Image (cartoon, rainbow, N blue to C red; front, side, top):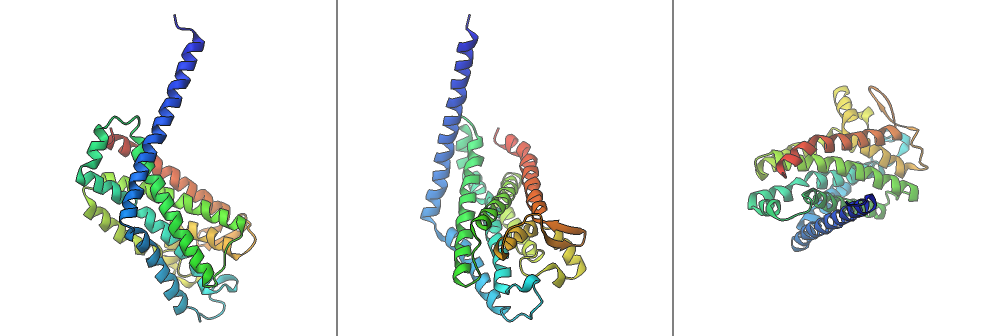
Length: 285
């Protein structure tokens, strides 16, 4: 008869081995994605260049905006900076499903599914790690450029808030994109969804203009847009001393604080991962 102590020791050893193998598989698959990026760096360059052009051109276009247009007498460049940072992370995360979709179409995903992987969750984890890293690198590049343009830099606490906010947004959008990669028939459909969703979500947010500048119907859309809940805390991080309990947005349905913004993003992230989990389990089975 096997003693309870030996059974517990064996179970702990198996769990430790499973975690080690999962980490090894995830690292290998993540490394493969970064090797692809190294061979085709245009993805990273374009991801930084497009929002950078927006930052420079829009900042110059509205540099002489009348006083009182923006809350707190903020310059338009600083106001726009938060929106461009969020847009950069959002765009990168929205493309998260493309590598998986191409693996599906070229047959590499089928090879992974028949490979002796300890856990097929490593396929999803590798994509999440890759896109999260890429999004943060691109966002930091935009932040540094904005600082060089004189639009400011958040303090230590502000930078932490920026990173937490971006991580929540990236996790949520990455989950959505991965779900679409397994639900849609091909990359043409996924690219179409990305193109259709990208700019409308940007314009229907507070990235380019405050709610007070919008017509009522657009103000409602912007106040419900997840991008707005990411933009406002980052904008507050640039504005000065942090106080997440202060009101950041006067929405048509009421006042929204920094804590509310982070809570909404957290709930959205959790809901999307729960929503796509059955789909991923079915497709990766």
